[in-house]
Length: 251
Image (tube, rainbow, N blue to C red; front, side, top):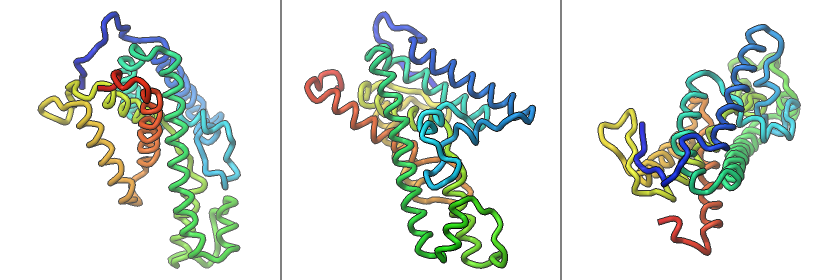
């Protein structure tokens, strides 16, 4: 995919985007090597767990955004970051862009955890208190439950609490949202579309798709859709806040 707009005197790889690409790449390579050699699984250390999990650490709100599951995950995130983030950084400068990136990643984590909290609250009302407590503290095997409703709910609860979220997608979706607001009529060619599409329509389509998939909540879907939506939501608020006295920079 490509986008046609580029500000005058723009850098093809501005400093904040370049550093983010390097940091994400180093995290990915280090995680792969250490895991391959059986030394340590950094995903369990740096991925973001739900606060009820014994594996949760506050620093994971930052580190989770630099972790990726596989080569496709990091490739498409970093490609999107470079494509859209470079243009935005050339407009805003490295400092404002960096603040925006971190805020949208943090916002993605907050919305994702908020939705998880609601799902956990629903399950809590359907389970005996002692069973809920055992699963919340990491128990993976509860006797005499297999095949029962409590067994199914226990699996769901364990997944919600003890499986971490990773990836830069929340921030990347925030960057895409900013691009759609700042350059709404710029045409973008996507690999899966035969014709270019304006940035504002791409943002609307991607946002609607993430909302639909998030609400669908299919058990086979392991994508953190509400983290994506959280990045877009916090990005929208921040762009509006920065432009409340200077709307000319938007449209």
